[in-house]
Amino acid sequence: MNVDTAIIIITHGSRRNTFVEDMEGVTKYIEDKLRIPVYLSHNEFTEPNWRNLVSSLLEKGINNFIFALAFLGRGNHVAKDIMGSFGVNEFYKWVEAQYEGKKLKVYFTRPLADSPLVKLSLLYRISSALRKDNSFNFLEDPEEIEENSMELSRQKVREITGKDGEELEIISRAVYASGNLEIARHIYISKDAIEMGVSALKSGIGILTDVKMVKAGLRWNAENYLDDAVELAKKLKITRTAAGIRIGLSKEPKIVVIGNSPTALVEAIKMHEEEGVEIPLIVATPPGFTNAVEAKERLISTDIPCIVLRGNYGGSNIAVSIMNEIIRYARGKNG
Image 1 (cartoon, one colour):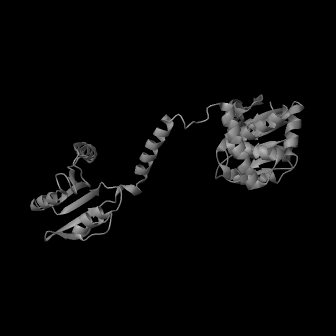
Image 2 (cartoon, rainbow, N blue to C red; image 1 turned 60 degrees about the vertical axis):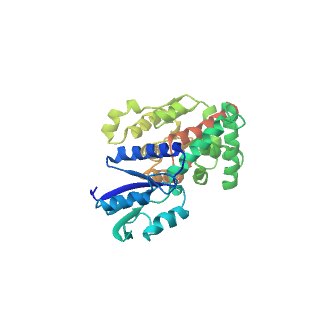
Image 3 (spheres, rainbow, N blue to C red; image 1 turned 60 degrees about the horizontal axis):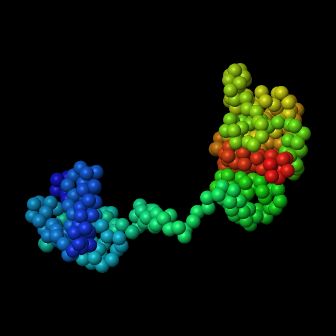
C-alpha cells in the first residue's frame, strides 16, 4: 500500500473503557492480518477523535484515507457527522474530497449490518442461548426423529405429486434421504414396478448393485462385483461398474440398483435388450451431467419395470432409500 494512504477505523465511541478495549482488540487483529498500520478513532466521547486524527495525518502529507466504518447501520453519525464532513455519499469507491480546505481522496466501507458474517454471528449467539434454555428442546429419540421427518416429508410430497399409498412412501423416503424436496417432482415409477420388486424378493431373486456404497446401505443381502471386474473392464473397454453389472447379470436374473454409475445402467439395459437377460426391476438414481440423464431416459423407454430419479439429480443414498422401502414391503411393511 502507498505510504501516503491511511486506514482509519471509526467507531461511535463510548466513555466506557471496556468499549475502547474491545475495539483496540479488533484493530490489532486487522493490523496483524494486513501487516500495515491501522488507526483506531471515534466519533464522540473518547479520543482519538477521527477529526483530529485526519487533521494530524494531513499535516504529515497523507492524503488518501480508507475509512472502515465500525457502525451497524447507516444512521446520522455515518451519513452526516462523518461522510457529510467530506461531502461524500458513496461506499466502496475512491472519491475526491476536501477537508479543512485540503484536497484528499477518501474510500468508505459500508456499515456492518448488511454483512452476512455479522448476521451469522448474531444467529449463532442467539442459537447458543436457545440451546442452553431447557424449554427449547430438540428431538433426540431416533425413532421419533425419523417418524416426525417422514410425516413432514409425506405431507409435502402429497401436496406436490398428489400420490398416495406405496408410491407416496417411496418418494417420501427418497426426499427424506436426500433432504431435497424438489426431487419429488422427478421420480418416475413404472406400472407394476413396486409389485415386481416385492414379488422378486419374495421368490428369492437377489439384488445386484453398481457400487459398494449401495450394497452397504441395503437391508438385504446384495451382490457387487466391482473388485472382480478389472480384467473384464480392460478386455471389453468398459468401466469397472459396467463390467461388474455384466458379471452379476451373467449368473442369473437379479434386481439391479444403480446409485452412482450411468455406464452400469447402460450395461444392464444392453444385456436385457441384446441378450435377453431378465431383470425384474431396476432402481436407477445415478447423478451427473454426462450420460446420466440419457441413460435414465433410455431405461424409462424400455419394458423393464423401473423406479427412476430423472434429470441430473441422484445419488447412492437415494437408490438405497427407495430399494429399502421395497424390501420393507417384501418383509411385510415392518421389516
